[in-house]
Image (cartoon, rainbow over all chains, first blue to last red; front, side, top):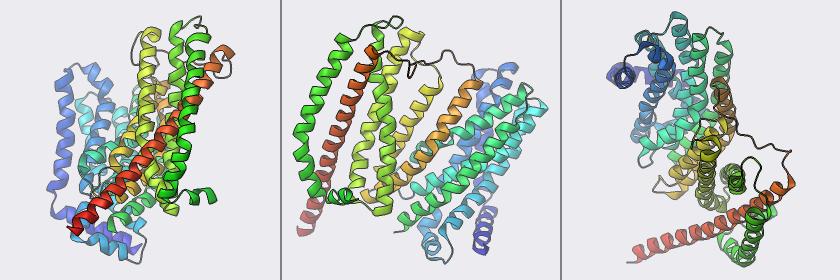
Length: 221
Length: 243
């Protein structure tokens, strides 16, 4: 466990030294979202109707955008070899990397999204639902994306390949995340959606670390 | 297990497949003759769908085979990762594009059937969407297995992906069904499972059988090609070293 915390602290420290990397991802999220009203038109009813889907898709893309560097730096400078030799499980190391990724992208996205939701004309309860679903749903995106990053480590065209692998697997999270906000907008309770999002996150938590570790071991061979 | 070990040696597999190939090709051709006779001549047009019901004789077996193909990829992935079965990687590499083709055939025939029946080539129906996602999972598998300079790494990465994909497929299917019930569907795809009439069921099963044989035949041929390709690469490498 101390190894987990040490690796998490190291990754957060690295991001703290170069905050620009995170800022670029958040800026992408804002710009990509702002393009939709420009493309579709400023009609308020239509924008409020599609806001949940647009914000969720933009969050998914933003989260993927930062993932292709998740393991590459460690792979290139030899840190990954040390992690492979370390006396504690590689699964925990992979989990620590994903946790760090979630803290620096998923969490800020969940905080930022309601402010963009205001611009789309979402009411207060929908904004709450948006923040809550992003908070519960983005860990799944980090885990699935982390798996795709581990699988494509050292591959040709790894960035596009990563998106091709991760996006179909992220479909359930997207459906329930955007669905929860829409359910809230028509005045129904969204706790079912939230519970399923939580279940998806737990399934990802139970399966992806093993697959990530297996993929990283092959990359290290 | 004994049978799996018997086929583990690629050279022995090649001899085995070449011995089966002629009779398998003959059986496939014969099954197609019978199946197409039932499907195009013998079976009556449907009272509602008319002649377009015949598209179903290709569409439904393609859907079955594309799903079975992904299950096959998962089993091959497990046997590659657990037993390091040397042939599993080659068969997976050969089977993935075949399965993807069946998924694509299923989507295209479904869309051709949907035009006269539903009045549109595509609706965001739950079954259509999950088949499309299955096709994307196939594409990911194919792209990943060919993305490395070292083919072994690509094979093992794709094996992990196939296992994770097989775990996720039911979840994706369930969530797409849920999504579709939230948004009111334009029409519901109905092919009443057990209430199907024998006049339709017979050609359907014959066509399913012949397409299954075709699937096996194509995978066998492509596996042989993979073995030959690996041999050529090794021969080229040793020739380079000698020069």
